Image (cartoon, rainbow, N blue to C red):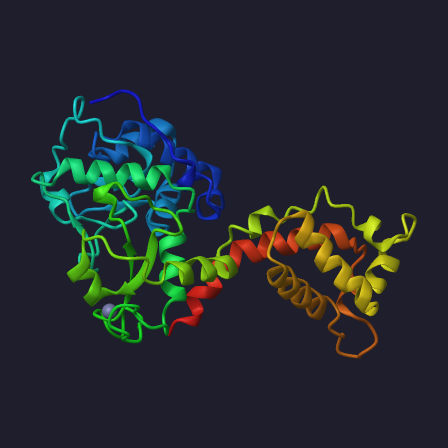
Length: 342
Ligand SMILES: [Zn+2]
């Protein structure tokens, strides 16, 4: 077994990971370091004892599905292949053959125990390492966030498959018509996992076009949809360095004067949208949508109709509140999407 391990920021830098208690995060790192070359851990209890973790720390990891468990007591790090690249020269196959047989590999290189999903790669020892390596490399080199596949597929529900024109449906409604990712130049042929090389087509067509190059199909549409739903733009909206008082033109205005102006002065509001979008290179429609939502939330009247929500706060600094707002809109954008699909 190799005694060095890699950790991918694609996983440990996500909100899902960082929102776990520190003690669960610590346990995860210990499990990651001590897993075998395929991410399996035969003695999780011993490791917990060693680290001083309790059952709750482990429960969090299991519930959040950062580790998958087997009846035998063995565990596996779900995102193992995202953290670690297989070096075939130093690689020792896992002893936990039986457990491995119950796993599949998702297109984003995460292990899964839900073998019912389409497009799973088989994880037998007969797998083609070259193909796997190319796929791994493409995922690692990609600038797209880990959640990209999931989000873009959801966004294409209700749109037409560019090949057979069927309306794409959620997996629960129709497996054949569910949206899937198609790399126009397949990863196995050296294609990249990047915008411009990605189309979303129905599962049926995907099966017939697997590993075959296609023309651009709806790659342009994917780019446009990602512009609006991708949180690529959202993380860039950090307001700490944007001086909103500059926009108001009143450097000495009090926090409540600035907020009143923001709510009442349409010109100021629009100026702010443009200013944030321009400074933070976020799409204008995204910023506008968020600022409108922010405005309507904070200006809601209380029950007696005498005060707006923001006036009930002890202090209300527009800049700080907007910063929090954009952070949250980014954090919850995945969850919101999830609820739309029924
Ligand atoms: Zn189709």
